[in-house]
Length: 289
Image 1: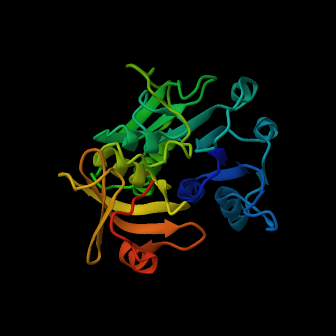
Image 2 (image 1 turned 60 degrees about the vertical axis):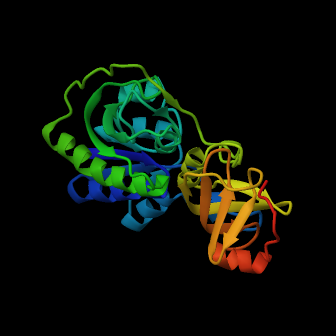
């Protein structure tokens, strides 16, 4: 088929590359180039960079799809609403990383982890003018590992979604099946969602860390918790209080302990918790806020 591809982040790149093996990807639509810092050069999105490497024309304007000679648009984490006038001229399918109608919206993988879901999946759906409300052509489901991060789960889901997409393109999409069941919505993750509240449970705090970007403060500076595990049982002291035993650093929570593995102090690189604790020279009774 002659296709347009609409996507932005790095995890969408393997889908684009797979499509180019058996189909003619005539156009790629991605977000406008951005600066990574105030003084930095403009940089393309990962999908746009991959398209340039593959020699595929690119644009940031969705409406360009309607004027291009394509049969179908394939959408993977594009991040923008596609209006009805474009959809009426070019049908589109979306590879969505959830078991619809659960977790429609911007952050389905992260919200599944936050909610403690045991299972999720990937669905191929036709786009309509609603938010991930179109008919579904097929799904693949997976169990979510107890320590699996959002990045790891996303990689697994994309790997499942690629053959799902290709097989349906090869045999024809058909009408699809209307979604059934009660929908839930995966709102975009904010910094507030990732702020660690040590009065909460270690189980939920661990989920925040698995999503990525979880943070707190130590000595009035931001500290990101990059990797951790959790254990039941209470420590002495107040929530947020640190306990060190050799290379092991635990944090008391409202229910259980969060065992720190890797952290990223403000303005520095990620380090093991032992290296961080040695450099910080932790004092008895110190807390994370």
